[in-house]
Amino acid sequence: MPWHTYIIECRDNTLYTGITNNLPRRLKAHNSGNGGRYTKYRRPMKLIHCEVSSTRSEALKREAYIKGLPREKKLQLCGRKIETVPLVSMNDKKFMEFAINEARKNFKALSGGPFGACIARRGRVIAVSRNTVLKNDATCHAEINAIRKASRTLGTYDLSGCVIYSTTEPCPMCFAAIHWARIKRIIYGTKTGDAKKAGFNELNIPDVKLASLGKSKIRFTGSVLVNECKGLLKEWSVLANKVFY
Ligand SMILES: [Zn+2]
Image (tube, rainbow, N blue to C red; front, side, top):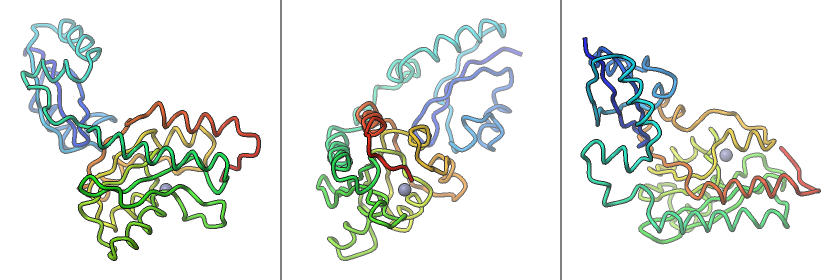
């Protein structure tokens, strides 16, 4: 049987490259959650590229080469035009900056950790909030505060049509709140694991796993302005009077 080097596109828009000598069986495995740790919670996924090699070692070489390519090059390889609508727009970056600037206020105010969130709808900011847990409320994460603010502004709990921008991937509590608020898209910077490493008492469950377990249709994009968001955690780590919770 010939060997295949393939690329699949996961539901969170990430690409996965692998090799197999039984493509139908491997795709079935990926889509049933048995195709490996990375793809397990990123279903459903679709095959976007496949090339044939006569030997396993040849397929492995192609796999290593493709894995080293940037996303655009991988998409080019699939004969797919580079997305005319980029995954992350200028507006997305702008709204993330609102969240970052808000988070930064906690370096002085110390009302909570270095986390900020922004909710926008149709290109307009609806709410910007930061974490205020240290004002004696463990539920006052930036996203929850932003949801409360946006709901007050719009006069409804139903925030469908809104996008939430969060400097760090929403935790399970915030992910659930976002679900209940019917927000369909999450854009975040650093991962939950980064906040845990920085010293926060995170439940380290990625959103992609939560969405898969809850059969949620929420879409998310991570690593947006990730260096700036990592910078928040770094700046926080050198503060003399910081408080972890
Ligand atoms: Zn949270």
